[in-house]
Amino acid sequence: MILGSSTQNPIWFIAVVLAVIGLFIWNAISAPKQGWNVLAEKFRAGMKPDGAKITQITGVMNGRKLYPKGLTALISEEGIYLTTGFPFSWTHPPLFIKWSDMTNFKENRVGEVGFNLQATVQYTDKKLELELPIKLSDEFKQKVGICLSTF
Image (cartoon, rainbow, N blue to C red; front, side):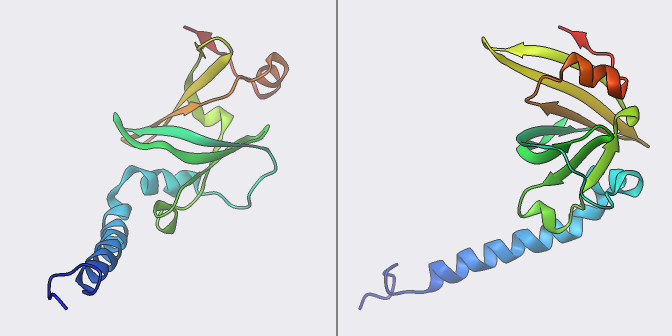
C-alpha cells in the first residue's frame, strides 16, 4: 500500500466532509447579516399559499447576483412566495411578498417565445431584484393591480 494513494487513504474523504461542514457553518454565521434575512423581518412567510410553481428564478440582492437561478416561487393572486435552494434554505426562511410591496415591474421578451418579468422589493437598505421566467396574463395583471412597462 502506498501511503499517498487516493483509493486507500481516507484523507480526501475527510477533507470533503470538512469542507461541506465549513460551508454550513459559514452560511449559519453570515446569514443573519445578509439581505435575505433583513427582508425576512418584514416578509417572512406564514403558510405556503396555493399558486403556480416556478423554478430557476434569479435574485439580485443590492446589485450582486446572489441567487442565479437558485430561487423557487409560488405565484398567487396575493403575491409571490419565495424560497432558496439547498444549502441556503437552512438559514434563509421563506418570504411572502405582496404585489403591492413590489415596484419597477418590467416585462421583456427572451428569444422567440420567452418572457421575463422583473420586479424590485425594497426594505430598509436591502433591495431584492427578481427575474421571473413568466408572462402574466392581462387579466391577472389587472386583477392584482400591476402596471408593467415593456422594454
